Length: 282
Length: 293
Image (cartoon, rainbow over the protein chains, first blue to last red):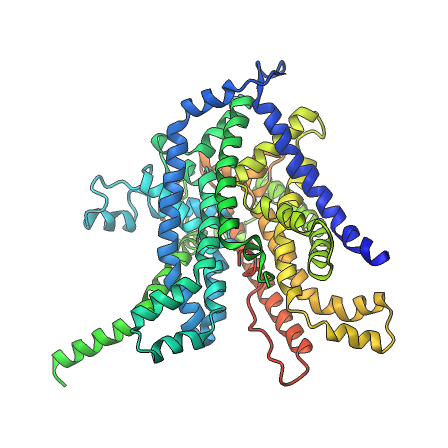
C-alpha cells in the first residue's frame, strides 16, 4: 500500500505547480480571449469575434512568423547536421570540447547574443561589407530586413537542433554502417539509406524544438528586424503590454498555441512521446 | 611532385574532410557573437551606443559595478535564479524519481504535463500567466510572480536532465546496500543520492541558466521589478552601457566553470558506479547537453 502512494507523493508538488501555474492560466487566457469591453469593464460573453478580428487584422504577421520560423528551422537543420555528425562519428577526443562549443551560446544572455548580431550585421561592419561586396546585400543594409531576423532565429536556437541530432546519431550502431559498406554501398548510399533514416528521431525532435520557440519569438524581430518584419510574438507582446487589448492578445496567443499543438500531436504520432523525453521508450 | 598531383591530393583531402571543415565553420559561427560580446566589453565608445569599435580600455572591467540600476537588476536576477533553482530542482528531482522508478497510473499524463511546457512558445506561457494574475488580481506583479513563473518553466527541464541520469543508474548497487542491512532511507542517502547528485547538479545548473537568462516570460510578469535581461531590454533603446557586456562575460565565465565542475563530478560518479571492470561507463556528456536531447 505504502509503495503505491510513494510515486504520487513524489509527483505531487511538481504536478500541482504545473497544473496551477501552467494549465489553469491557459483556461484563464481562454476565458479572457472570449471577453468583450475595455480594460476594467471586461465581460465574458463568448465573444468569438475576438478570434476572427484578430486573425484578419494580423494574418500577415502569422504567416510571416511561420515562414521565418520554417526557413530558420530548415537552415538550422542544414547547418547542424554536419556538426552533429562530426561530433558523433569523427570528433574522438575533441567530442567534449565540441559539445561545449555547442552549448556555450546558452551561457551568454539571449538578449546580448541578439544584440551582438545587431553589431555584427550593422551597416559599417565587415560582415555587411563582405555581403555587399559579393552581391548578397545590394543595398548595403542587412539590419531591419527579413533575412536578418531569420539569421538571428537560426543562430539563437541552433543548440536545440544540434543536441537532439547528436543524441540520435551517437546512438546509431556503427556495425550497421559497416554492414552497408560490406554490401558494397557507396558512402553516399550508406548515408542516405542507413545513417539518415536512423537519425530521423533526432531530426524530428530538433526541428520541433527549433520551430516552436522560433515561431513565437519576438526578440529577434525587435532587434534585427524593421517595421515590416514584425512577427506574431511582437503583436501579442505589444497588445498585452502596451495597448492593453487583452482579449485580442489572448485570442492570438491561443491560435498560436493551437497551431503549435497540432504540430506536437503530429510529432507524437510520428515519433512517440517518449522520444522527446529521453531513451526510455523501450 | 608536380603541381597537379598536389592539387589533386588537396582535393582528395578536402573531399574526405568536407564534413569536418563544415563542422569547424559552424563552431566558429556559434562562437562569433560571444567573441563580439567579449571584444566590445573592452570598447571605449564616445556616445551612448556601444555598436562600433572606438578604442581599447580596461575601464569598464575595472568599474564593472558602477551602475546602481544595473547592480540592482543583477541582484534581483541572482536572487530570483537561486530561489527558482532550489525550488525547481527539488520538485523536479522528485518527479524524475517517480517517473523512472515507479509504475503508477497516470504516467502518460504526467509525461505529457512535463513535455507540454517545453513545447509551448514562451510568449504564450507569459501571456497565459499574465492573464491568470490579471483576472485573479493577486498576487500583484513583481518578484513573487516572477518566481512562480520561473519555477514553472524550469521544472520540466530539471525533470528531463535528472531523469536521463537516473535511467543509466545501476540498481544492483542499491540492492547490495539493502543486502548489507541498510534501511531504505540509508540506502537513498548513502548510495542513491551521491550517485545521482551530478545529474541533480546538472539539472540545477540548467534551471539557473534558464532563469537568469529569461526575458520573454519575465517581460510579461515583472510589473515594475527589473531583472538583468529586462534591464538590457530597457537600456537597448537609449544605448547599452559597456558594463552590461562585462557582466555578461563574468556570468559566462562562472557558468563555464560550474559546467566544468559538473562534468568532472559526473565522471567521478560514473567511475564510482562502474566498479565492475567488464562494465563500460557511458561516455560522459557535458551537463546540460541532455536538456534538449
